[in-house]
Amino acid sequence: MLVLDENLPLDQQHWLRKWRIRFRVVGLDVGAFGAPDESLLPVLQKLRQPTFFTLDQDFYQPAWAHARYCLVWLDVQRRDAAGFVRRFLRHPGFDTRAGRMGIIARVKPEGIRFWRVGARAQQSLPWPPQ
Image (cartoon, rainbow, N blue to C red):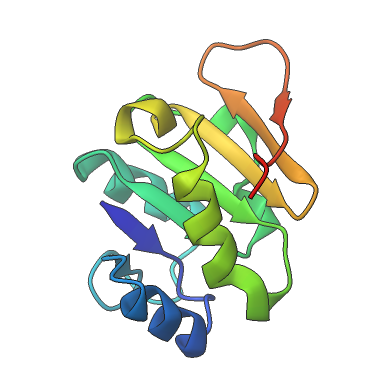
């Protein structure tokens, strides 16, 4: 299940729908609108293997890593968010739910940096050639 933070623009949600990427939105389908970041974590733990996408860098905290979800900080321009959601989901390292669980990722145009549950160091992967 994909979950978008309330801060992802509506036009970006439109693109995801156009590409037939199904998702839920915080404040509409999941959790409460405007709730503190930390209050969303227990909600995500109750969902079935959610991958949460946000433009909020506060979610990139290794201590928040949990085996039951994936948090993705889109460190990109707001207008490019949908494209990077799709790109992340197609990346060979993260193209399955099982491959994403336990990950806290920072998605940038240059590549992906991430923490995995139980890892002592941050890892990084480049984007595959297109």
